[in-house]
Length: 103
Image (tube, rainbow, N blue to C red):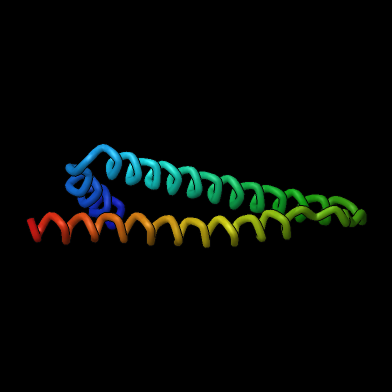
């Protein structure tokens, strides 16, 4: 629901100049790419967790090469990036909306 509202606001807000539209478009594209990467990381963590659990049940072998912490850290950084990109987009949309109201 919130995504639909953001898309409506973005559609209304990009009625300005080409540079503004390009920036908003780039930010939306980056946000989509970051969110897709987050989904892939979460899937990789879930897959590795389930594989590690299955291996632990099937054998007495313990694998010390766990890449989950690296995925988790990358996920943290991407979540922060997602929040910052979202804030930048929101700022641009709000500024354009205020500008539109003043004109």
